Amino acid sequence: MIIFLLGVCFLLTLLQLTTTGISSQIQLVEGTLHRRNYFYIGEQYVNTPGTKNGSEIAFGQIYVERLVPVNVTRSLPILMIHGHGMTGTNFLNTPDGRPGWADYFMSQGFEVYIVDQPSRGRSAWQMGVDGNQSDFDATYISSHFTAVKQFHLWPQAALHTQWPGNGTAGDPIFDNFYASTMPSLISDEESSVKVRKALGDLLDLIGPVVLLTHSQSGQYGWILGDTRPSLIKTIIALEPIGPPFINAVFPPLTPARPFGLTEIPVTYSPPIFFASDLKTEIVPSLSNASLGTTCYHQAAPARQMVNLKEIPTLVVTSESSYHAIYDACTVGFLAQAGVPVTHVELASVGIKGNAHMMFMEKNGLEIAEQVVLDWIQKTTL
Image (cartoon, rainbow, N blue to C red):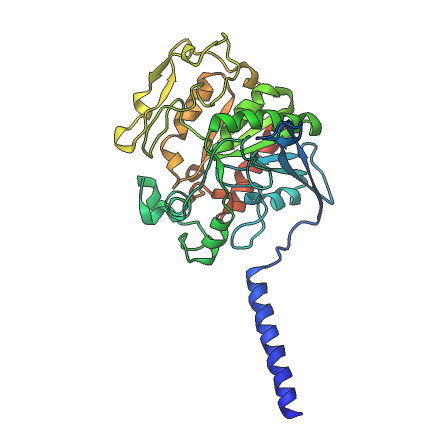
């Protein structure tokens, strides 16, 4: 009997330890009380590759998650679009278990929509239909996003202090974040076409929104604002992909975004028929060969991005990110094209030490409250 009881006690202790270990890895985030559902939109049908029997598969659809707080006090929802290699989980909670931006904005009375880009994450990638994919290795994520101070690939990287953890493989917070990254379409042109269709359908369904983009999805803000200008009430672009016309900082510094800030055409006035119709010139004050940046603007007289001229736009740049080198060039291009744009460099308002994944970092809610919410309240009320 004694041996039996000792065995039971051992098993109960083992179970408790095991449960404790699991709970330390899967912590519940206490957040805003809300309801949620999900749906798909934007799908098109195509013949199943390799068949001639008339069977079809869907492609191009996006996963949409709708989060509705118990007390909705804002007239406009926020639509959040993640960047390259990421999914909508970016905004749900942080890799170290804190509430994310979706929860914060629900606490402020906003309904929130989060998507996974086409052919990414919970939005199916169809073999033989969708284009090739690529992914980020752990060193890329560390050197560009989470441990930039250690790699020092650009001067501002030395100022990075806000990532929660050491930002490299083996650190539990980094491992949790890196495990969330996803293969992404290699072609930004293909991604842009698919996003224009699927997100356009979503906007037609849900109506006017505050649009929040990050990184790669920055170009989608200009595209969606161009195609659905009445449904985008303001654009908040967190370090949008740029600069105009050419890649920067990280070789190869090859031409990109032939329509200025987008891979696919947007509306200009006077009209353009080819990307080459946009005549460019170098802006010496915003170019730095030693840092790998060449800033191009339009040669005068600059064509106007007419469908974006009534959409207040905010570009947010972190102190320690590689975007600190060239976001001013992006902002200058937008302003020259008639877009009402404001540029907030976080360090200039006392928010220091952030890199590219600012909304996941230790002071992320400070950015949400003092910069993003403040902007929304000034521009949409």
